[in-house]
Image 1 (cartoon, rainbow, N blue to C red):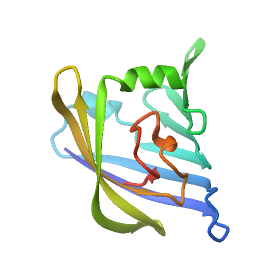
Image 2 (cartoon, helix red, strand yellow; image 1 turned 135 degrees about the vertical axis):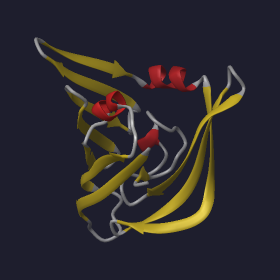
Image 3 (cartoon, rainbow, N blue to C red; image 1 turned 180 degrees about the vertical axis):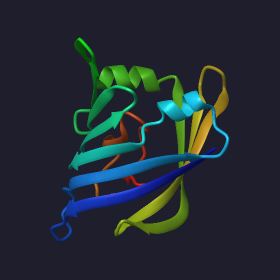
Length: 168
């Protein structure tokens, strides 16, 4: 399985301001011998609209889906547009804290830096550890920038404690 991500970022920067307003667009491509059902469920692209520590993700996984993350209040809202009904699922800081309480996120800097879409990014290794099973359940290498969003709350829904906006 091969996933190719093309990142384009459009933004307005004012000097050293930490408030970013703009969008990041990811295009997903799967190559090779892949289960057709997995391929069908992969959104062809994902659009992130960002303003400060707030992010709206739009994708189509057979149905339009919008995910709104408010990093300042640590709230997550999922909006699903199902024929005949619209569903909103709201997760508060308490809900997210409870969900994340079963996991430990071991975050370490790699010491590597990259410039992605004109933004200086720092590399991190992130290991997700199950407290219940006492084993690693996933790991990833990611690159974040503090020029888009700031602090650790921008990732409170996905990876608590990871600083900056993930540009991979």
